[in-house]
Length: 187
Image (cartoon, rainbow, N blue to C red; front, side, top):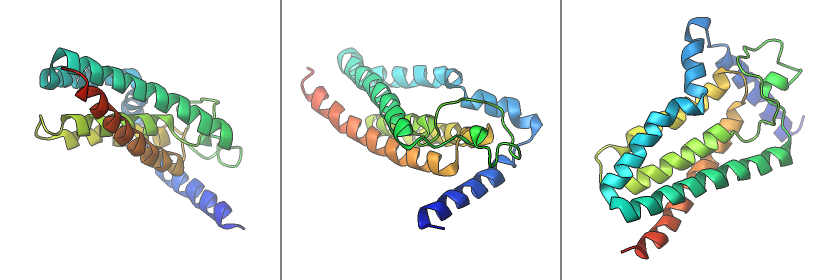
């Protein structure tokens, strides 16, 4: 067994253990957490905080950069998924009969788009808002819950989540630096 095969096997074992922690009384909670639309109030709050801190013109610039970040992140993740073609746990015949499955998407697994994009947006927002508000690090609760929900519902392995987190941090920081360039041009 190669080193990569050992890592993938360990990843499956860890997924099975984490996924097995789920129980029916909590399913509705995690299904809500994993749904992007459940987080609309958080997004509206973030937009409000941006406009409050930066004003209309700079706020609009930051919202546009955030929208570009989400678009870039989503498309880049799709390229990575199509390149690696890793089956999701719910579609993996070696384990799908022993795990809890609450969702059944058919796209590929590596990397997690939920993890990547939520960490990208969160890092961007933390860096953008840190000079204006006291506790922006509390925003990390969102991507951690959001990413873990993907294991709970049976659609991502831990490596998918972790790689997505790292990629999202890089994307969020990169787009934050890009936003600084644009903000200098707004008066």
